[in-house]
Image (tube, rainbow over all chains, first blue to last red; front, side, top):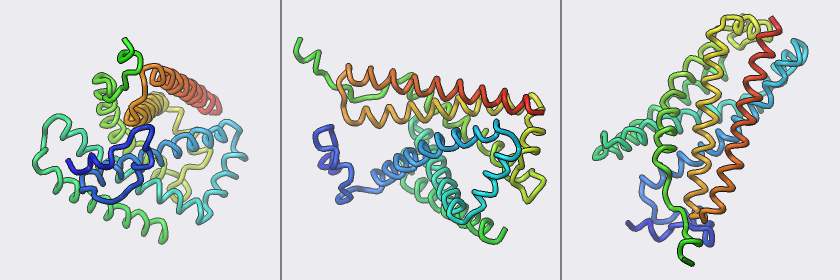
Length: 130
Length: 124
């Protein structure tokens, strides 16, 4: 329970950002939360941008040309990485919440993150080459 | 009585937690389908053009699936945001207000999304 030292509350919320003396479980939790916040931002951006679809073919196809730019493609890649990390980590959270695989949680987390890295590299390559 | 009014909320509601897990699972399934269709079945190098999107939405199962996807994602997201707030141990009053805000945001997002689905189908 050493991570209780960094336990945040509204008066010391900045302790959330202290990276010292945390074990891998806390790191997994932090990764899940950070990707969650990033994906929340993406979700609302995505919903807003899709309104372009209601404005007809010129508006939407112009938008597609805009996002072919490398900056946006990098952003897209970040979203994919966030989805992979959050989704795979989420599977672990869901299973352990029902008591499945609790004792092998650490190895499961490492394995899932390796899968996330491999898939991320695959999609990055696809983006650069395709 | 003083303890009751300043009591801090420290744990998630179990019903909301269950919804978060169920929507999470549904998202994994529907997201896979959503990504394949939007990135691999278009006419020009995979990504759907406007014409592709409108054509694909004419099949009624697609707007239904996308509406379900929208509801799952918005619910999962906002319940998750609320969980993050709960980790700051808010008072019941603060949490109730935040819950109302998040619910309103969710309702607006879902209504907007479903309106957009109708708008897209109508273009075809």
